[in-house]
Length: 455
Image (cartoon, rainbow, N blue to C red; front, side, top):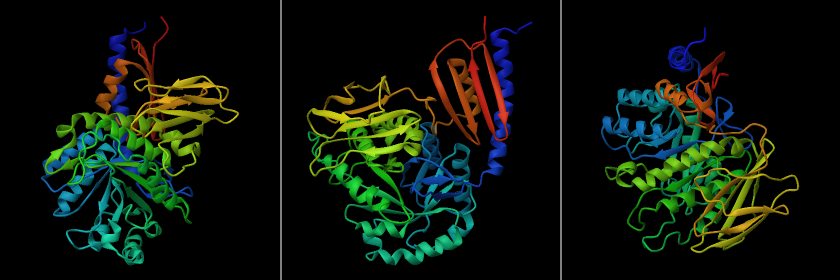
């Protein structure tokens, strides 16, 4: 006799909870967490390419505040945090890394304590921790190292001590592109927001040029290729106000279409205030962007990339990725007024035209092999052409603990795949009463299919 839906769901939840806990424990023991670069200059985690999305942090406050920040960033799917080790004891460092590990977050750790830039004891003590993304060996390079080659001894010492994690630098427009050859990853900084509250988006075409030329192209034009992480302004300072949510949206996608290998929002904490508390509109936008970029990450990482040729003074741009028999298109306008678009797509690109994120406007239409339309000021369109062989759905670093996963399967018909500590939701578009669950375990991977049983 078949069990009723509620009792079956209760049984499945208990079984799934046991399976998830076993997998979590197994992953904690078996995942080394090594980071490197592949031939395309993408960041890899245990040899698999990833698109990191994270935050910079000041972290000059209490352990309780640090724990709060980790939990908040984990709740929106962030995958790394950049922070200092200043004024942290070894015990506190271990607690921080362990806390990150429970959420699948990794630390881009500035390897120096205080003013000592070559504290190798920090590297030697924590180089085996699974929550480490890499070692930040330089920031604002022109200030720290007036000659790019000056950082080479630090790079070599860190690489010798820990060959299994990346060496990271951070440069901006004032730093010559020559610096990128002296690190593995360049966090490229561009903070274009004006102080004028009425000048929303003023000068944003600089983002199109600078992230492309000084950020991405500088990293990809050398051998071996380097990774470029785009740093997005989410703070104010003496010459700049806090960006609006629309500005953060536009800057982020302008950076993605340039071809970056990941995104960092800078910063979560400023002067004792946190982004989620002090600027809720901006925080909600960052939450949305993190989910959307996670959704597109498989196409960005694995698709064939085409980027609009840039001409000096351009206000519009677009890029697309062919992935899994479909084209994923991002088109955006950095101007303060509407601009016309006419994107000639490849011959094999055909309909249907689908708005990738229905909460966003879609101003483009498809006719005669062209995507055309007018996108409003600071507008962004993200769409898909064609029907992919397998929908990428909500794939990406959206992590759920076992309890949240249980609630999710009550809410909608979904398919989840768990690899190590990361749970990916692949299909979640058809809410229905849950009548049955199939749990498949193969090695370290668990696939959970939630679907109606026949009446």
